[in-house]
Image (cartoon, rainbow, N blue to C red; front, side, top):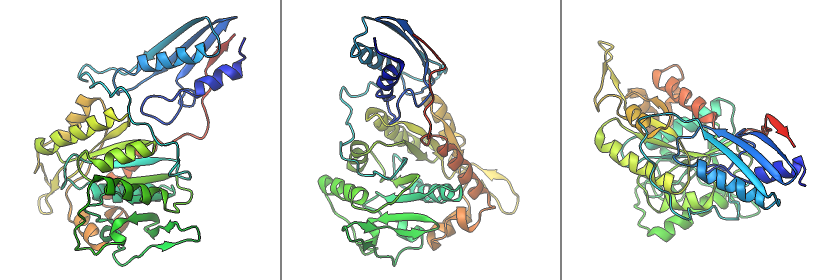
Length: 367
């Protein structure tokens, strides 16, 4: 008869769908009981990812069968409640699995910042999120995976930076605002167009992850290009993302593409941590009134419909534009501004998804 440690270790080998953490460490295994070759297990969680309960149940049953239990009862409860969440699209039968080679062995968490279309301020959000996380005390890096439009050198005052290489032939990131930075923009003239096919894009992104001496990082923020192409697929296949953050402006034309990006992450089994509404409102300097230039609450309503968190709304302000053009992000240059405070609130929300250092044991174990 397997002992307690053997059962727990087997359950620890089961990853929750869309996460790189196991169901024990996430605190989802609530009760384990049984006698002889019989075992009962109760699992509870709250997930907006759709019908993952059956997936978890099947994995647990298979795991217990491998321990030679003959009678297995698994009770799985998903506490997510929302009458407005539509049926999730079915995931691919075999979602791409991360490579066995760990490209980022010293990085604890990876956050992809994505958008369905260009021009919604995704890179601005990525830069200020990274700077805000650094201000919270985390060790942070940012990878400019937007290979066709690498703007991070300009936005972080690193236009003249050139990467060095260590004795092992790995690139040493540049540093700005307390954040380690790697961008293809360090190697290319700022006015030169990059004309690459998909395989070259994928290889370049792999090198910017695996051939860089990132050091020990609490989190790596990855600024993805717009859309649902080669860069997104390469990253979702080659590393296990902690999650993705979707950025959109409020109007329908931007939201439509953002939802497509959200669907893509579902299909490749990457959790979407939430959605951010950028360019949400404009506050008039003279009258102090907020103006909804691109509509009102579009992203907030879409997040509610999809069952994901609404992480926050970023207003249109001159400080954000000036910060991006001058290489001094608003979250650092003007920390008391409304925009900087909103970015800090979003950073706090994202940080709640970081890996916990200690596993959570089942509350009840009787055998």
